[in-house]
Length: 122
Image (cartoon, rainbow, N blue to C red; front, side, top):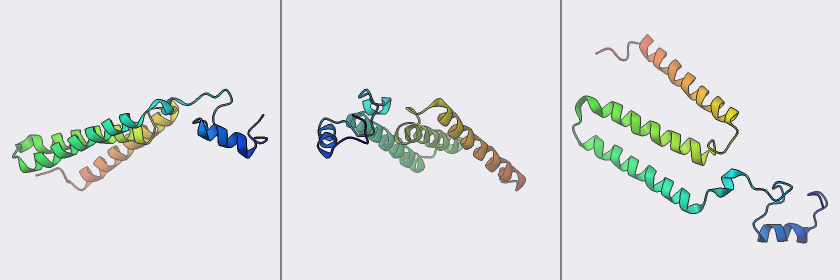
């Protein structure tokens, strides 16, 4: 029976058993279905710990290490969020490549703009 011919009862049965009407024909699920709620809780805790470290770093005199450390922690959080919550980790590599290429291009253009206005000079 195709999705078009599925009766409401059949769709209800699929929903009860964790199957979606638009799922793969052989009952296959995508790789992102393997990520459990527990995994998302662990990711949220990791993000919270990194955020707490960023806040703590703002109260400690770290000197010249402060800005690079914050930028590093920001980048780690960005890649975690993009990989899991935007599902780039489970998506086609082409989409992942396009996304990260766009991010790198945006950062390069932003840095060039800042250099143009002599932002980094003391």
